[in-house]
Length: 321
Image (cartoon, rainbow, N blue to C red; front, side, top):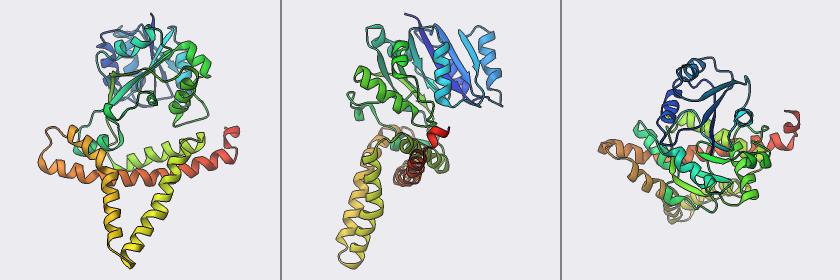
């Protein structure tokens, strides 16, 4: 069956060759690659044209200046000619059998398929980041897993039935789309061998901005109310109360607080031990010490971003966009 790979790009000149080279090396070559550019001002378009003009890939380039990710994906899928759509992102490196594995369940009769993603770190901090924020295969429940649009596939008819990616969302758009597909077709067949590798955020500032935007998207889309509520109760009630009790009544409360923090970072620490490979001893200690800091910064960024999204939703900003 004809398989179309689609992606959106915006000023991805530094990262784009990695994706395009990995698409060239697929064991199951894509029948077409449709890339929508959102108005890049760097050398993104020149790189795309290099691959297209050299017939290195069956590549089509579409300009959609000013489009967000959802709009760009919908434009790309609308222009694609294949019945099977595989979605990925610039900045990732695809394993050679990514497309072959990802398309397998759909060729066999499924409407959807969920690939996986793994960190591709280049610094000790990025190793810690990947271990802290990304699940391992063992952490995934296939019945509830919602794939990232770095590695997902579906029938074009399924995209049409779902109404496409939600163009009113700038972040978390793939989760909303996934939820609609799961409601229509059930759980995504999980294909952990269909791996997209990507580099985690390399600084706390970049990470905080990313998680602020994710949480703002949650607020806009009204996602994960319970998770966000638990986070506010934990940081604004439980932690201050434990500190006050520890100072004024018994230090055992402080010990309980430390044990709670250790439990919260235990699984990331386990993943870190599986990722740190050839890091020197001091780099391993640095990465391990970074895990609770990353957790804390991510939680605080979410706590700031979520009410911004809720306010956007409650004030009717969606209707004005």
